[in-house]
Length: 278
Image (cartoon, rainbow, N blue to C red):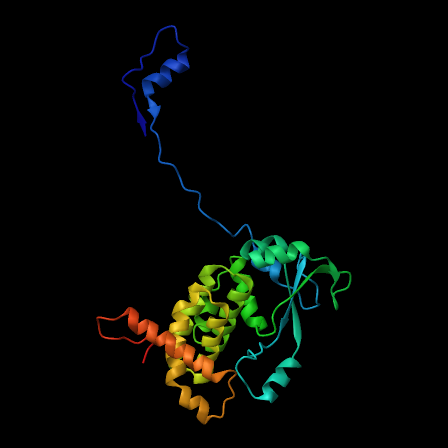
């Protein structure tokens, strides 16, 4: 689109083409175009994959050592056989790139700055910084974390995760331990809250202990909801013969949490935790 300027007029002494363009008018000012975020040219997902012959991804310089199956927190008792089977489980290696993962976690940033390159067993001539992930976090949960940091589409996996209380608990723990991006923690916490009404009291207990242990204000909803379901299922825990570390302290804390919630809502009808279903 062209428009004529009222203040412009061609003069006979002006060059011919200048006079021509003056008569035509000037291009209108166009709205600024936003730069669309296109990630196809950064195919980071393919750089995470290693082929079937055990060759590390290109330019990988960090090796996450992750348990094939996450181990339940020792704060809540589980059958000894389960712990033994998982302790003997396979430790897997997942490669990544420091410059990418360090941008997704201040814990990674600090740790990977101090680490030294080491020879990776099973990968001839491969050297990388070795980062040992806590044994309570499984490789499947950790893969979700890394893929999210890389900007990979994880919607399908998130839908599956939202139905698995055990893996959501692993994800919350990973977020707390490694200061992962808040959107991951928000997703994991909200999804776990919505499952607490349908999981065994032992898992609600583990969620409550975890939320209390880290004291992260972002876990307030999980603390309140888990406290409610721990108290509600306390007799089930006793009936199952579940061994709980410091049971009196845990029960007292959970009751205190419920009391605090009710006091905040004084003046109205006391409600059960907001993101739980009865």
